[in-house]
Image: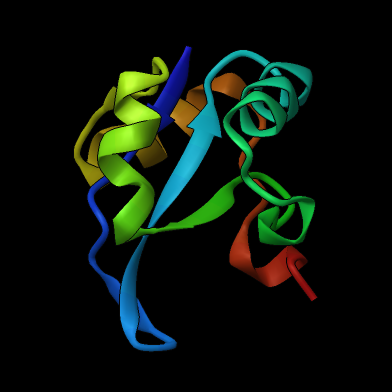
Amino acid sequence: MILLDPPLWPRHGTTWGHLVSDASLAELHAFAAGAGVPPRAFDRDHYDVPRERYDELVAAGAVPVGTRELIRRLRASGLRIPARDRH
């Protein structure tokens, strides 16, 4: 399932949310490509997406969830990359 949390993180003049899969990176990349999310938005286990794309991504099939639920589901999937391993 493709999940999207609320755009709460400010950066570059907008706020950003996270697009993830709780099943596989292949599912995530396929959804992102189909929705026109650029590959440069990918950050190891999620795509950063601007507030302006939120409604469009939900209409395309992303399921809106809270931030805690998104992290819980990403961890449970085994796809989460901990912050200490991001650099």
